[in-house]
Image (cartoon, rainbow over all chains, first blue to last red; front, side, top):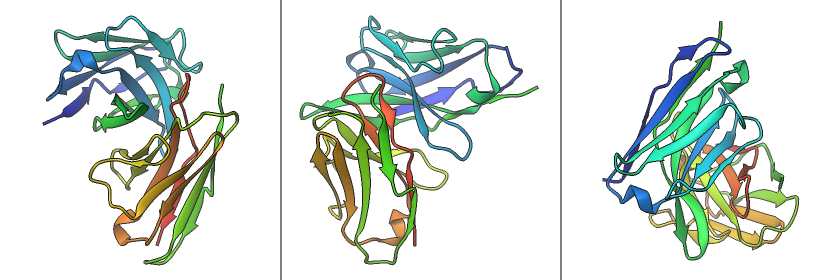
Length: 121
Length: 106
């Protein structure tokens, strides 16, 4: 079964750090670009970061640039998000999502169940 | 950055009604738009990609149209199972940007 499972969410104080992980099963992980998307409580979806299948190309939303770092280990079929200098506004459910190319169009076709990050003193 | 404006923010309709949701991009994005459904308490799922192509397994009452800057998601005959928040996503260029969401109620 094609699946993404996130872990690592927790309660952390402002200024603290956290590392999220996303384990992939059921597909050739290295062949797919991956994303992190977050959703603050009661609000909409916000794209956070992208990493290409090889790991060589990375993008970030301006709101997290310089504080969050995306990475992947294709041998372990794992995606990570290192979160530093956390702020209250980083409180959200964090989803990893697979990007697929379908008929020359991109889309996020597989999503994990999400992991909750709460930044609070 | 490309902004995506989704409307309405919420709507209430009856079972069997035709429902339309709009997304407008701040600049042309060709057909680089996808639609997602998020039922209450659940994970988003892909409905439409390439602006108008139905994802495998999605009921045919859902359809998408548009290109350039104006896009529409249509539910031909609303069903109780369609209660959800719907999001568009421009995937034409970085940074990817979601619409604000449309909450659909019955």
